[in-house]
Length: 158
Ligand SMILES: [Zn+2]
Image (cartoon, rainbow, N blue to C red):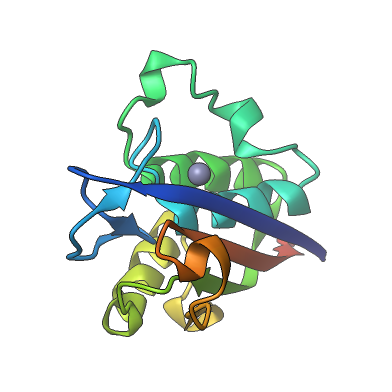
């Protein structure tokens, strides 16, 4: 078995959709980035890559490459899942923390788990998502952006 940790942060920008964990969440702003800036999906991709000792998503999918402009980040997770399977691993479980002062994401967590599980060919029951505000502290508490942590366990497939 192998474990991996992922972290990502994006700042809010006007005029963009907010996509978290592959699910569009209604909010007055979205996150800024080259892709859809799905901070949750990026943290999960990095956790899986980390468990495989394959670097990070910036190395695999450079933001200077036009192929990834405005790409749905669930596609990146599908590509990462392919690398995982090639190396003989499957998801054991994932635990994810979303740090967002706003918006409230509790009602979207099950949808995120389904999208992530689909991309990883895993069971939604093996993916846990927690959301926390920042109690108004710091840049995230000041609603300047959203951050996410992901921790995964991969198991070797016989
Ligand atoms: Zn990112």
